Image (cartoon, rainbow, N blue to C red; front, side, top):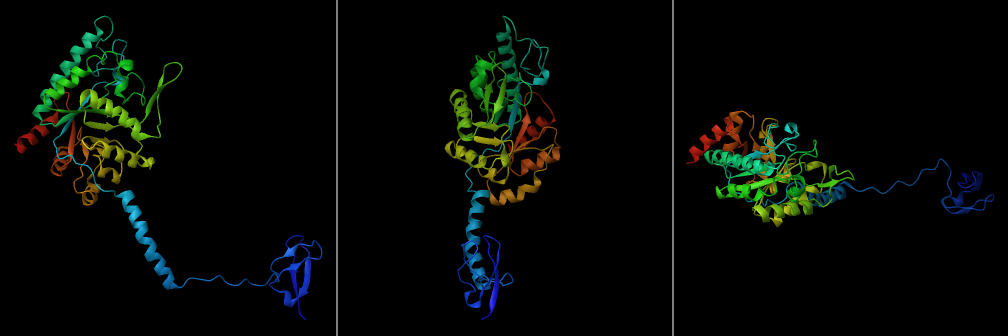
Length: 354
């Protein structure tokens, strides 16, 4: 009978056995281990069973619709935003760390020469803030604005990027001169018929042993934002929130957390700083016209989300860009604490609406 040569996989010995043992279990006479499939080294394995072209097509036909459905819900979720007012929104930047000084440590009103320290510091600040509000209200009314977003309510005492606090609950600790007058400030804006809003951050401000703060990431973005927003809604009736320093596409779960937040608070307008297509279903994504041309995404966004719009910052942008954005139904953001060319353009829009 013909012999076949096999190599024991356990001890490496070359063996010879009868042809009738091919493919069967044999025991190595040297190490006594079973060789599960006796075959010569050059023997070829039986080819694996292959799917026919028809079966492959059937599998693709079943899988593709499921993948497409999941992708559509992830990238193009149902639209829930409802904010029919497309009039402009003013921006009030109250402070800058670049203009701080020993007498104005939080850089209020971008003027280091102001003095809000000493015995009369709080009263001096109150007068300056309310004068600032009155000047801004006059501009907001002339431009036909629907409301205003207040930046840096807590001041800017700390270096960038901690400087943007985004937590109104910390007023008493971080800006003791603002805490007693904030209610009067927002009341004055609301009494002028304006919606009010402010900036919030999806991080938590924490302090080290020396009292120095830093912005710490938070897993539950919805919870931390809701706590900050609920405080501002209850105290000042705020309804517009600029979400500063969010992660956008760098954090895949964020879009769903912010969407759940928008579903829970349908009467607010969220304006996220960082975003991608899916954010348009529940918010007004922020875009600076001087840095970016949003025209590339407008057509696709409006096709997927017919009632969507963006919050477009027209500061230092060309008038042609601002006019096009206004005609497309986007909400324009503008500097409202001093009169400038953007204000003049918006005043013309207001007259056209009338």
